[in-house]
Length: 100
Image (cartoon, rainbow, N blue to C red; front, side, top):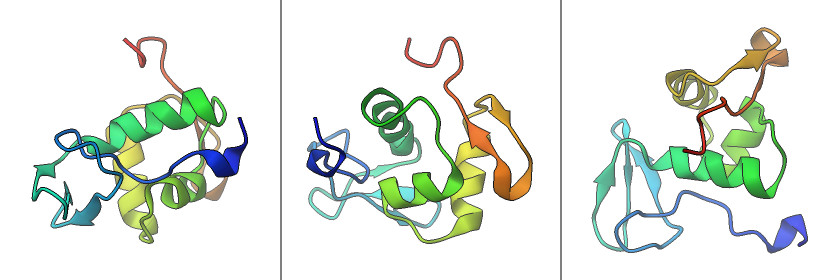
């Protein structure tokens, strides 16, 4: 599978569209008007399975289509993923129970 063949973005857990946008500290689906605080977790799982078993803040922002570095960092830290490095050099990895 080629990386450019993978649909990026956050998939709506309700209607399954890859159209969710970040709005008021939630993910919002303009297709079905669903709000979800944790929809990005599935996107990170997909990234680890389909792209590679690590992710940086920049890769996360590109994959889920957000521009804010602060938001990306806050979301990644909230997932309590193991990481190496500090600040700009931080790389996140899936935890042992991440895919359960």
